[in-house]
Amino acid sequence: MKIGTGKSYAKIILIGEHAVVYGEPAIALPVKSIRLLAKVEPIPDGRQEVTSAFFTGDLNAGQLTNFAGIAMLIRRLLVFFNAADQGFHLTITSALPSERGMGSSAATAVAVVRAFYDAFQTSLSHSVLLNWAGISEKALHGNPSGLDAATASAEKPQWFVRGKSLRSIMMPRNGVLLIADTGIAGQTKIAVDQVAQKLKKDPKTYQPLITDIGDAVRQAALALAQDDIITLGQLLNRDQADLAALGVSSPELDRLINVALDNGAYGAKLTGSGMGGCMIALAAADQAPTIIQALKAANAVKVWEYHFETK
Ligand code: MEV
Image 1 (cartoon, rainbow, N blue to C red):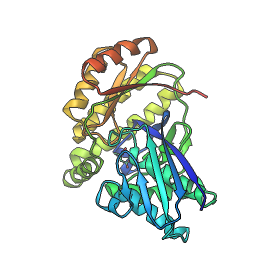
Image 2 (spheres, helix red, strand yellow; image 1 turned 45 degrees about the vertical axis):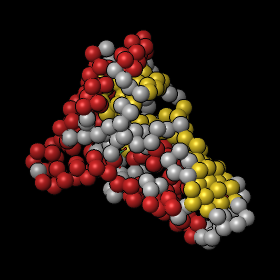
Image 3 (tube, rainbow, N blue to C red; image 1 turned 120 degrees about the vertical axis):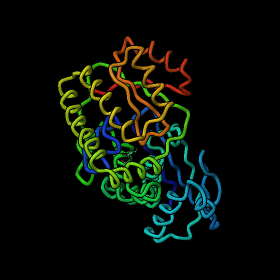
Image 4 (tube, rainbow, N blue to C red; image 1 turned 180 degrees about the vertical axis):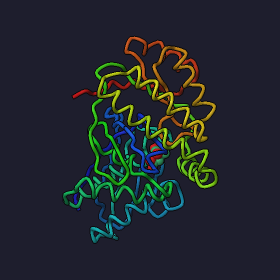
């Protein structure tokens, strides 16, 4: 084993979360300015240590924390490399806020898998990477679509359908996406479980919402192809209405969404699993400063400005 490194990005789901779990498409972007780095270094005794913002300590102690999924992933990687007792120090440095719908857990998994493959000097295909990331994502919320890991490991915006191969998708040539953090932890497992329960108990009410999200995503792809950000904004609003009806929005998300719309955004919605976490707003570039100011005045703990990459 040598020193190994791996990186990944924050992900933002533009449209299609939750319905993507049930086979509908979704569109998501890697935010390359917000990255996560993993560095694994061999150490001579058998200690297996982790340093990160969300867990620091012995790998075994990680089993009892929200690091459990990643701890399990690391142990399986070590078995795979025939190095179960290998001593190491893993350092995870992240600019992603955790539990805010920006894919922190998937980004951690992606960077950690890349770092261990690098350390064991083994080439890694994208599909194998996503299979590994699925292990910790499954531990986290039971039924991951794979969208988060696919986007955290991508270089370009993605059109994603569960179980199908990924496709890059063009972003608009104008407009910006503002991302605002409510400061409240999102609750991926609870949100995904809640949608599953609702679909099981009352499919007549809830299945049409899933289908409508899928339709909105397909229309969003068309709007993107036509560089029509006004229609795209309307589709984000329609998606948000469906997500709210599914019960995964929150008063804090609703408040920031309304602030963005009141200040001239074309559309705004939660991003990720919801019930907290971040919202996004699509806006004309010259309107962005006003909206950013309004979001901050409305207590968004952080606001990022994302400029679409068109290449
Ligand atoms: C979470 O970022 C996205 C969800 O659609 C869950 C998933 O796709 O696994 C809510």
